[in-house]
Length: 275
Image (cartoon, rainbow, N blue to C red; front, side, top):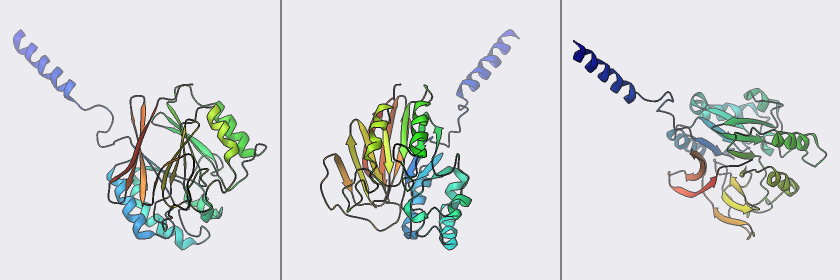
């Protein structure tokens, strides 16, 4: 009798240790960042389909979601394309210039803070979303909020990522620091920002400046832009439709740029942020 009980206990223990973890095994825990979908609806749909294949928990859009933010029909199309994605993942947008600060943008999303600039924490990453269409000079409300936010980042945070529409570094037309935002880079450096994502230029580009990666991810559907000039800090440029996938493994964050055919365009890794 005792032997039977021991066998039953052993079987139950074995079954327990073979159970899956509490985390849903169907979720990869990955985060997606992409942008500039605008009028390229067919391309945007393909990009969204590829994104959904990666089963993300969180998706960020770097702005210019639609062609004219004042046009309700543009939002109907955008919502139709992203409906399935937004049902399975959190979706956080950034204001681009084509949104025109429309009330339709703010009604379409339920965003923290004032909806123009806000922050959130996901997967050990502190995300800061800025509005590069609004004032960001050192005496502006947004700049003061940014500095206070960076000062108050939780000590347990592994990485800090900032996202806004207009890139500081770009090899496309007049898009390189079009908004004159270079003055905020010392703030990023002082408080340990790891990566800055932008859009506006319709391509993929990786730049590296003062130990921070500056990524342009504007390949979500709008007409692609080619390279027009060289830039000192640019490490890789690709005229492709794409999205960026963020994955954390231990104390490392890997960013993979994936094109519309699911091919890897670029991949790089950053180490754990230390306060």
